[in-house]
Amino acid sequence: MIVQEAVEHLELFGYCLLEEAIPAEQAERMAERYFALHEEPTNRAYLQNPDDDLYQTLFSLLNLDELCWACVAHPDVLAIARHFLGPDIRVAEACSKWVKPSAPAGGVHTDSAHDLPDLLPDTPWMINSIWMMTDFTEEIGATRIMPSSHRLRRRPPKGMNADDRRLLPITGRRGSVFLWHGGVWHANGANTTQDQDRMALNIAYYPPWWNLAREGGHQPVWPETFERMPKELQELTRHRVARTRAEFYESG
Ligand SMILES: O=C(O)CCC(=O)C(=O)O
Ligand SMILES: [Fe+2]
Image 1 (tube, helix red, strand yellow):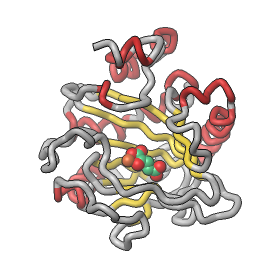
Image 2 (cartoon, helix red, strand yellow; image 1 turned 90 degrees about the horizontal axis):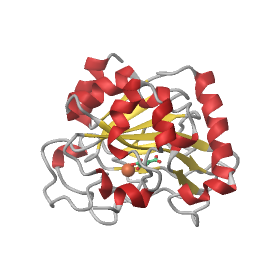
Image 3 (cartoon, rainbow, N blue to C red; image 1 turned 90 degrees about the vertical axis):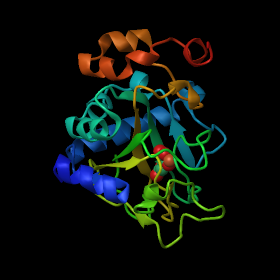
């Protein structure tokens, strides 16, 4: 899908899919690396919820892994995000999301909307993305999205389940990426397989007026990481360089 088509699809349906945006072999290497990083005891501090074994989010990936850098700065993804958020976009966090066999579905939600008004803003406040590091099938826990729900500008009704038939599983081959508007209703699907693991790379883009300190768990870019980054990645992350979360997010 070319960028213009993807932009139109996202505008209308709240999401778009870029198939095989990186080679499958590259995604396989990344998946392998992320499974290992999740198992590393020293990385436990960066897990969103260390008590949830079946659905794991590992923050601080920009520091822990250089393989994700090419995805974060992928030209087509940046062009789509900039269309909605303006030229000076910022990357808030890159994290990996492992859905293990037997993991239940997540709750249906909008993103980064917890302290926004009931009538959600007309202006997009976030474009989120997920890279499929393993093939995404319905059974493995592909993300489910309700098309066009961002146009309602409200949160999903209480009690809406991820298996609601109005939600569409976003499936594709490893190496594909999909993007969505923060206001679209979505959830991770259940992994109903016995032996297949779902691995995703999740990267969130925000406009310059967004307060990046609002999200719990996000980690800063370490100065030594920042120094090694290519210029374009520095442009995207220069607003949150610090050694610890406290130093940056809890100082003001
Ligand atoms: O893991 C998933 O499929 C969904 C993750 C999600 O809701 C998010 O990154 O905002
Ligand atoms: Fe989400």
